[in-house]
Amino acid sequence: MRVLVVGGGGREHALCWAIAASPLAEALFCAPGNAGIAGDAVCVPVAADDIDGILRLVRDERIEFVVVGPEAPLVAGLVDRLDAAGVKAFGPTAAAARLEGSKAFAKDLCARYGIPTAPYGRFTGLEAAEAFIEGRPLPIVVKADGLAAGKGVTIAETRDEARAAAREMLAEERFGAAGREIVIEEFLAGEEASFFALVDGETALPLAAAQDHKRVGDGDTGPNTGGMGAYSPAPVVTEEVAERVMARIVRPTVAAMKAEGAPFKGVLYAGLMIEDGEPRLLEYNVRFGDPECQALTVRLASDLLPALVASADGVLDMFDLRWHEDAALTVVMAAKGYPGDYAKGSVIGGLDALPADDGVTVFHAGTKEDGGTIRAAGGRVLGVTALAPSIAKAQRLAYKAVDAIDWPEGFCRRDIGARAIG
Ligand code: AMP
Ligand code: GLY
Image (cartoon, rainbow, N blue to C red; front, side, top):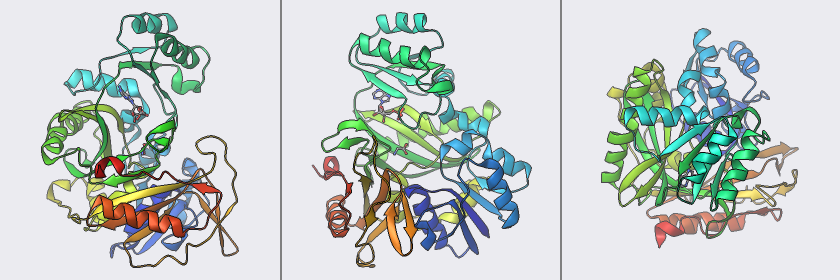
């Protein structure tokens, strides 16, 4: 099979790394990829959201299967365009990607089908939003409806803060079109986890669960990021909790999307809040989490590519996946300043000196090669991922590798996995 992976972050490096190992992959391309991905796939400089460019690439390279990493091209209809061109793809259509592309759509679906989530209201007008805020307990959560690169959520401790967030979105267009409608919902307490399932329109096959660390600083302090590290399994997602998530959230959602005429295919990522073993949905994403995907792929013992193809073909009911018993942990190394302004172009050394066989894989998230030198080219730059018999051991291995990387302009959290280790 001639395969194309769309995207260029740590998630896509992990996907390319797994797909390159598949006997089913005869040729592997990535658009646009990065310096690390270039070790596993032929990188082509086409942006992930350049849908016409991707279609041209698919035609020119006679691609037979496309794996779409990020949400933006999914929401923009890349899979619909590939379908129309007769090319098989892993990921949802634009209609199904509304689960992530519109929080109001996702919340309404939950309300109609009895899927547990926080009570909410949806608003396009500021007055109604302010009235809703008035009558609700604090803290209260204000969310832009559309895609906002993880920045569209405000957890307001006061009503003033909530009103200001609503005003910025609705009246001042802080997130442009993505914030012309907002969702305001009650705050959920508990422990967060990311739950992943492969879906083929009808059948959902649970993958492993993971936990990520969204804040930039140790002890969950500072601003939100795309994710500073992850580990899998997630101790809070016991077998019993996983069964509840499947029975109350994932399977009802898959059935609901089918009933709504927009069957979901691809990976369904449920962002959960779990309190006393009871899972509730925070939000849906329609793609793998990043960095969670990096921790998941190294734990997967089965070949990933046939599972992705089975999702596209609608035959997941005949599928089973095997996992390593071992735990995986990913430490993200980011450019100093991230998630605010940061410099690009600094040199990263020490990558070649890492031992190849000690259970550590360094996924690249934002790197460029320049005459044999690896340079930082993004905010999140590397995902140092370790596989070991326990989360504690994986943590030690990962930080040992982090400390062997020579990149003074980078930083990482030093407490990834701490909650699971206790
Ligand atoms: P989202 O971009 O929707 O994942 O939200 C970003 C983060 O905000 C989540 O990972 C949660 O930590 C937090 N969050 C979102 N909604 C709620 C809620 N209703 N209650 C508590 N925390 C929330
Ligand atoms: N790690 C969170 C996300 O991928 O959205």
